[in-house]
Image (cartoon, rainbow, N blue to C red):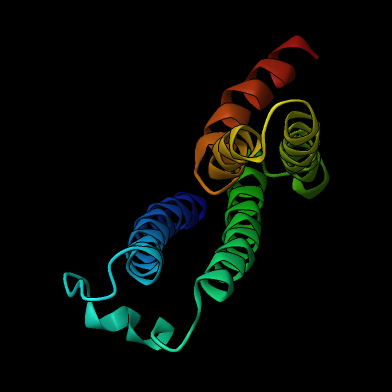
Length: 151
């Protein structure tokens, strides 16, 4: 049962990664279309729900979707770690996510003030991209195995 649960959760996290990639590519295409090429038609009809939105609305929708995706990756990752270790890992995994999100926000603010908003945005998006991926889970599995071997 435990092995089947782990396989299911890993398939779920990989599927979520593909869904996230698809959504953000489509949203970015629509965003580019609104800003630069209103006549561009190379995109999926799936994303037509964004047609009535302005560029700034799409921009903020991307931030909301980023938070939602990071939350979903956190939940699936914490559950997977809990199943693998047979102990609840919600708090520890949550700490990893708090560090990622806090670093993203802090670096965005500091770099925005010192250099430029674009440079801060680039670094924050990179860190938030990590939070929307299996990377924290893949980092924590060996970390917890090492921790259990040393205690």
